[in-house]
Length: 138
Ligand code: HEC
Ligand code: HEC
Image 1 (spheres, protein in one colour):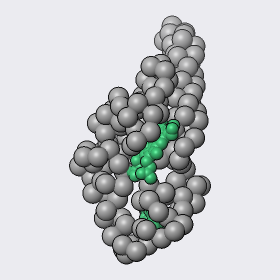
Image 2 (cartoon, helix red, strand yellow):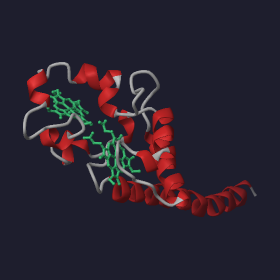
Image 3 (cartoon, helix red, strand yellow):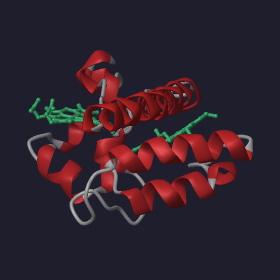
Image 4 (tube, helix red, strand yellow):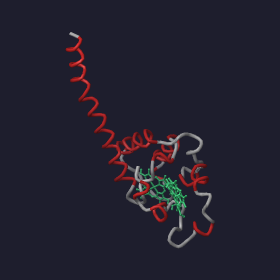
C-alpha cells in the first residue's frame, strides 16, 4: 500500500515540477530577449531584489529611455530577476545601477578614472567593452 501511495505521489507531482521548471525557463528567455536588446542582459545576481522591483516598476523612465513592456511580460521578468537577485547591502544602489553598488565599486576599484572614459568604454554600464558578452552569462 505504501508503495502505491508513493507511486501515486510521484505521478502526481512530476507534471507540477515539470511545469514550474519550464515556467522558470520561459521567464529567463523573456528576460534575455527583452532586457538584452539595448545593452547586455545585466546579470540578475548583481542587483538586490528591491532594486530590480523599483527598476521594473519604472521601465517607462529607464535611464533616459522608455523600455516599457506589457504588464504580463514585466511580471514574468521580475519573477526571474527576484529569484536570481543578489543580497541587500552589497548589491543595493540608490540609483538602481549595478555600477553604483558597493560590490561594483569594490570589484572595480583597480580601474583608473581615465579608463572609464576611454573611447571604447565611455560608460561604466558598457560591461561588454571590458568583459565581452559571454563573461556575463548567468
Ligand atoms: C530601449 C532600450 C532599453 C531596453 C529595452 C532596456 N534598457 Fe536597460 N538601459 C538602457 C539605457 C539607455 C541605459 C543607460 C546606459 C548608460 O548609462 O550607459 C540602461 C541601463 C540599465 C541598467 C543600469 C546599468 C548600470 O550602469 O549598472 C540596468 C540594471 C538595466 N538597464 C536593466 C534593464 C532591464 C532589466 C531591462 C529589461 C526589462 C532593460 N534594462 C531594458 C536602455 C534599455
Ligand atoms: C573599464 C573596464 C570595465 C568595465 C566597463 C566593467 N568592468 Fe567589470 N571588471 C573589470 C576589471 C578590470 C575587473 C577586476 C579584474 C577581474 O577580476 O577580472 C572586473 C571585475 C568584474 C567582476 C568580478 C570578476 C569576474 O569576472 O567575475 C564582475 C562580475 C564584473 N566585473 C562585472 C561587470 C559588470 C556587470 C559591468 C557593467 C555594469 C562591468 N563589470 C563593467 C573591468 C571592467
